[in-house]
Image 1 (cartoon, rainbow, N blue to C red):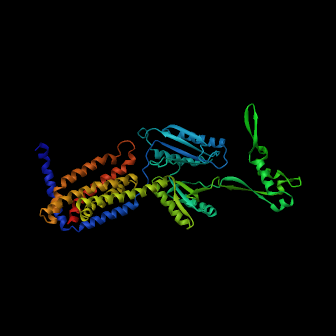
Image 2: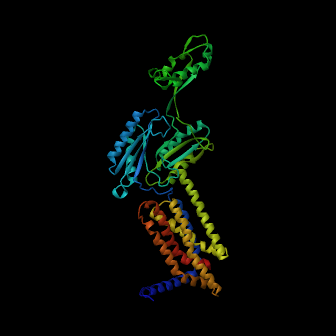
Image 3: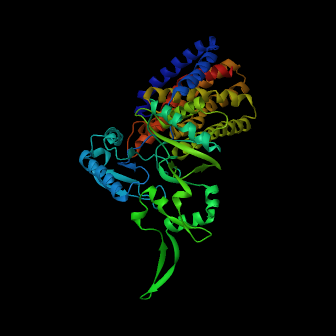
Length: 513
């Protein structure tokens, strides 16, 4: 044997003897294995229920953007000045910037609307600045209320976005085909959302901010004066619709002929009343005698979601909270205010989060089922796979406990880590159970076979478990680019393997007997 073997073998021999003595004593109180399994299940339920959830941890991508909007009817020039003010604020207050790009009226609200814009800020790499991207965004959001010509909020791009959607992370859709009920409940919903300690920068897409003139025709009076409703509507159309009346050609070029009154005669709502319409006797009748005009506000667009009239309430979450907390808060407000005629749904990043959660839960159950069936076929028994699968809740408890201790969230990467744990930790059970079955066939009693097999398999179990843990350690230590997303994956793997390793060496032989 080599020098290294001679130096290390006494240590491993002593470790095996110590483990064998401890396992022999544990077998005398093996009912404690049920207590340990119950404790692990309690850890999974209690700590897992209190873990914050999100689609993926927010990566520092060295960029963010300001989403801007102004009241409906804002001119392009006014909006451009607002965008320039915020661009200058970014240039002055964010020394870590590389570029600041601003765009006025990019068409977010449909063509022809000039009341939107955005400012995109690119930062130097994370290792070249003292402040993180999140700290810079929080500073910007604290200062945005000073720029009150419109509404602005800073947005970090989600780490994972299925359809590259923009907007805020929490998007909660309220649906009701009764438009009156929908519009009545929205102010109350927004009031509750603005009071929330979880949500910030609450906004809604259904805004009643588009000026509108409602023209009511006095049909009885019009009939008495010999004016038809069609004549009145056609006169209004000719005066204000800018309708194309025809074409004319000059110098080989064709031009449209558009018809409407001059701007000086259509800037004031009262200008409508000085129009005249000809009656059936050829007389000119003032429009003031035929119609009444009422000013009101209306939404620029009536939104639909799954064929229902809808309004989407969007919000950001305060620092320290996640998208899962935001969705729970929105759902709590909905349960409090909405009756059974309303339906709710999610959109944007919130929908991505909900769909990924359900998909990974299905993948977790599928992995458990497939491994059980494969083990049942391998051992030609349903009992041995059940004993081996006892290692799974032990590993899950270690993974959940590690997430809670180190302050990480329940996200798609930690869920992938849990799925990986199923395969990684059942290996320990296979090593012990298979060897114990062979020893029983050789004539050993069940308890003797369990203790002997666990002792003989101690070294390969330690070797493989430590190798996997050390292999995942760089993930948990946040080494390399885009490490933030991978930290929960590494923490779950390392914590789950080490926690289950200690318990498996005692619980599994006890459960085998």
